[in-house]
Length: 158
Image (tube, rainbow, N blue to C red; front, side, top):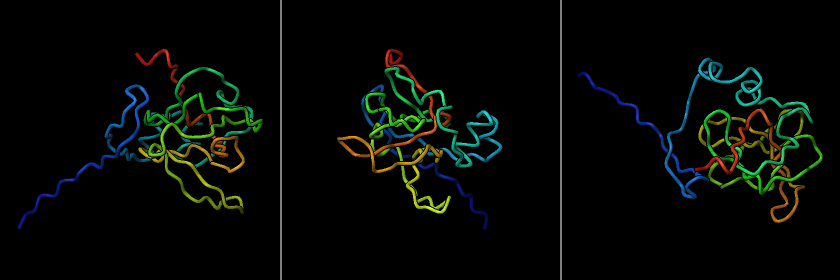
């Protein structure tokens, strides 16, 4: 008996800042080789190998533009500049993601400590970590790597 197996693509809802609504998108799974073809070596090291850029070196750590920060790997909207603040740590910091469903979390026990890793829900890119020492209203500090983000000016939403 010959059985044909079809692979169903998994879809998930993510918030889209341009429309202000949720939309269903396909989860993205690529091999390391596939990611290396589309990312710079630094973006690959950070997003796919869970690296961290040195403090005060990323292009967004002190950037003040008005807009949205997307995942550099898949374009999912992650953070709004309205939630960005100067944490004085050398990394771009936000007090909340653009929508809870656009990120996921994992316990990270590397470096002999327990931290909460933040990942893109759609492609699993390592973004950074969240700490519980941020400003109101959430008291959280989403400490992100610039190399994992792509800034899109709000004026470019049209």
